[in-house]
Image 1: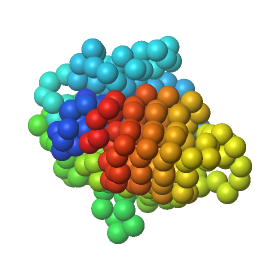
Image 2 (image 1 turned 30 degrees about the horizontal axis):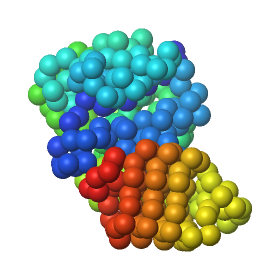
Image 3 (image 1 turned 180 degrees about the vertical axis):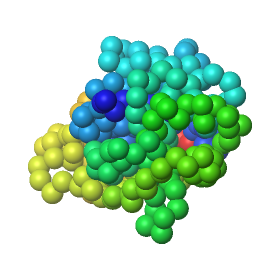
Image 4 (image 1 turned 180 degrees about the horizontal axis):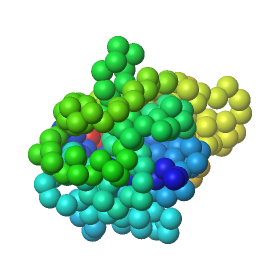
Length: 282
């Protein structure tokens, strides 16, 4: 049967500090799109036709965001609030094989290679080069639901894998292609943005979304940078490693290694290693 997918988005992002309190990790802004939109794009490119997003509260910002898409189902995690609790909730609604993606991971490669390598296996796990299991991407058969329910208190993927192996469940391992960043801190977030900008750097007439001809003469942009259409820039020095969202306003500022959220305003400040949300620098 076809593979379905679920994005786990029930975490509270407590290790992200103030940024996590303001922004759910699936809604972290990357060059030109939110993290959850990048995941959905990668799933589409892998041929996944049915995707669900698992949240802790149907009224959450993530739930409200994805409800605008009729093709995305929203699931509410059942107790307990552990990793295996989330997996059990998602597996119960799956028809057969379920690709699980953690909503705080950025992958450089689409997921097709992993799905192909996992074909025929009831369980498959992504691994580092040395063989250790990577949380963030794995595939499980619905037939394993009872095994997952037997370890609902488990909050680690390696522990789940060991339980499956002890029950003689064949577990495939698939080496990671490209790179992956697990976002547990603002520094991890900015590191993921760095990597994406390095890959997407364009030596042409565009700063990603915005034509160079649209940059006012009073503003200098140092690549790599992503300037979204609709951003307003004046008397500023931007970059390297700066992402500017749609409708953002930047005036009299010097920015490097920063993400300026859509609709945010930054004025009269030098800022490095920051995220701007609204009028606040975090």
